[in-house]
Image (cartoon, rainbow, N blue to C red):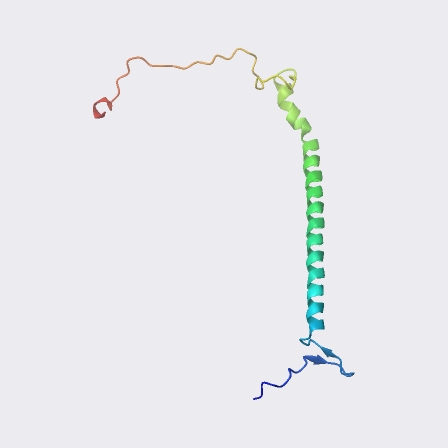
Amino acid sequence: MQNDMPPRPRVTYEKGIRIGGTGWFSRLLVLAVSAVVFVAAAVLSLVLLAVLFGVGVIVVGYLWWKTRKLRQQPRTTFGEARPFGDSRPFGDDGRTIDMEIVEKDVQRDDAGKQ
């Protein structure tokens, strides 16, 4: 086995053109092609991201538009629609009593364990 022999070309055509060699031109060509492929993939991903974002905005806007009647329904169910500045929940007519029940002198079963 001799190591000083030049490597055989991978592909040759009838006219003797070598393809797939290890010269500087082929390395430069591979570097240029890979850079172009990388840039094309990045541009394609940005375009796809923008298109998907646009489609998502359109779908959400369509659903928001189609459900506006359902969102207005609870306001009109309990009376007239209230303005946006009103902080009371729907159906609250101001007669709600907020209270807490406190039991006095309750003996607990676990009082001796403390």
